[in-house]
Image 1 (cartoon, one colour):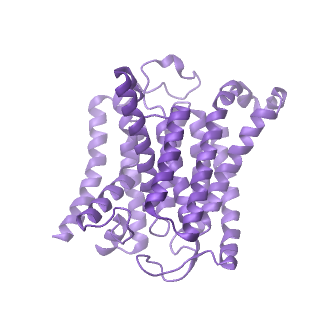
Image 2 (cartoon, helix red, strand yellow):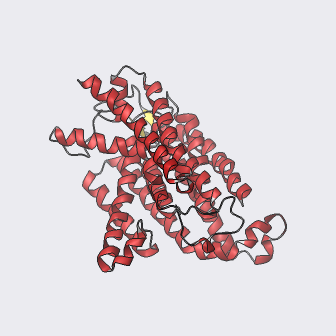
Image 3 (tube, one colour):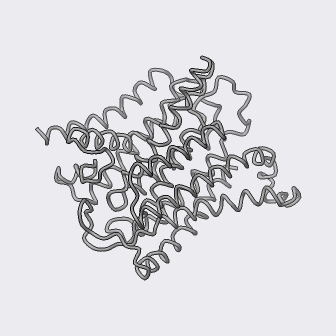
Length: 376
């Protein structure tokens, strides 16, 4: 299953790259361009159609897989696909969740395309995001801190609310990070790759497959989005990216006190330390840092946290003297530095986990010191 999951990366890339190339010309012909001006830093009109390729490269294989396990007979999966046949019962149990994820991503994609084309009020976008998040949480029990249910009705309610807010926060963090060539796609690919490693190690094949599809889709798009970008993903891509990363972060199992539920063929035994739950904060540290810092800056200036400006982390690094390309690469490296330790967090001894957490905190503290020293 590890090999099959990894093969989804080149499959998704083979869909994303040529489709992105075609969409560049299509976007120019149809006038689907992001024009310079205002808070935007690019100097020429650029097609904002790349999100279609990202969505298609994830959604098409997922839809084909759902149809295949639904309609193809069991005998089809023998021979070279015997590894799939072994997991058919589990895959079929996962089918409603896969369909729900596909619908949620589709709604985010359409929402983003409409926003790219006509511009929607931030409140409208946020309301739809919260509604989609609530549907995922309530219909598919997609909750963080599910152990809070042991506290009764209040604990269950708290888990539901926190899960909805988490999905909305991560979705908006990745959406806001899409403010410089190659930034959101590169950070998203790194985060997806880190989650791919974590889920493969613990034998979480469905989530690993989603991660692999996302890695391939983003790398294929990044070929044309690396600065200077020939195409942007637009909200049609960034909302899909954010929603899928939020879903992956919730559905990943970070620790388990009962090892019986884990597959024997998993490369490593399940993590059994509660602090494995902190992995998302380490892997997503940089996008969350950008979200929190730019929100505080806007609120201090008396403006809406959803107002557009050039106060994002990447913009602040450029004002420190970095080139735009250097700022993007630095943020990629910071994401990798904070996230690598999170992959094995739940399997570390307590003192090792403290060191890993301190390392991630030190990276963010270093960035904060550089920023505030310049401000002073």
